[in-house]
Length: 71
Image (cartoon, rainbow, N blue to C red; front, top):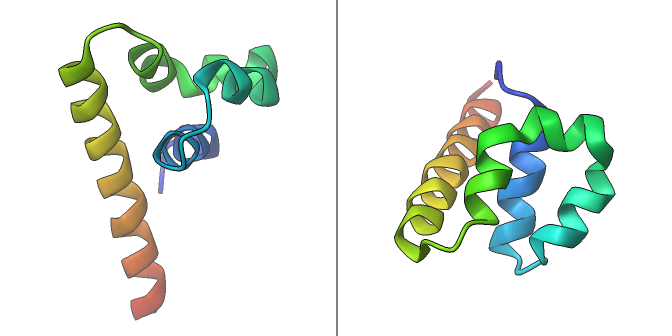
């Protein structure tokens, strides 16, 4: 798990339907910077890019959770 926790926070928040503006506000400027590309992509207007980015980020979250269960 080498990515910033903020990336996972953004991914799970998006999956739960939280508005990205509220997520970015909750993270603050430093956290939003660490969430970087995912946050920008999920705030974008291209639906397919948002779907791909969210699926990839959630796949990482699930993989990490599975890894934790196996330990």
